[in-house]
Length: 401
Image (cartoon, rainbow, N blue to C red; front, side, top):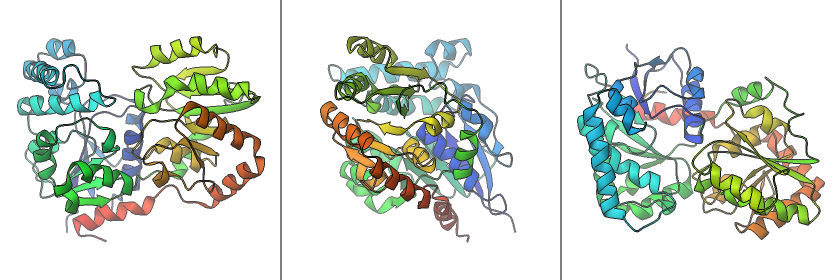
């Protein structure tokens, strides 16, 4: 009897929460139960090398590879259809949203891109009908229109209360899927508030991580000499508005003004780097807030820090917070809307106010409270933050045990 065949779609495998969640899913799937084809639009990113050997990575296609690359690359590769689609998307997005500013404008723009680019794309592995197509990151037009599959599921990774969108534009895409996978109850609620008619399609599958993967990589190098503060705080994530790193210099200054001898290190990359560096200079925190840039392996730094801090404006369910918990680190998260689905306050981390003063004061209290830090570590050692059993929900969709 042949095994069910799954196709998984993903944009690329740069370092990021959704990308790490995909690696966790691939590592959890059992090659004795399913065959998996993986189609990565652009074969880029440090996580490409962590695709399990048994997974069949489909060849990169030139048209798909330039969907999110600079438009001049689409022209150089003679992908004229993609170029036309992207120019049309840019015009339609400007016409619809001109004069407005959205924290999640990139998400809104990507929906326009896929609406206008997808018709120009070839079908994916057109000779095969898959038992299940998994579209792992929004937008989901490609899984809807370019794949032959008996069943389709699409993932939500973000808090939709923060997303600027046109529900009428997106609804037909979501409706084409048999199920919509949410990573937390709070994410489900924020999505169904925008799309109430899709409530019955929602299923909960928590992000899957590999504890062994995280812990082994954390021990690959020793970076303790690189983190040389009396108290080392660390944050990991893209330099974007969502992560709120532009406020870290002020929060760090408040901490230091209250007597906490901290250095705050930030691993990542992204469009807000210039803004963050300017804020560091404005606050006079050049010696105390250090941008470490992009790291292919951030885990040794998480392992070496004293406290992991996620100061985000919004999150779906932060993968890096879970990775820090796997490494038994006391975790601080701001009180974004989905925080309580991530952290049991004062049990496996602490939740602090979103404003700069509140964040600094809450973090300062944890720094001073060694008993609470030890309590958090004890609870983390006993906890399970990998969620490997969640893979069984994929098997259930396929009708296998």
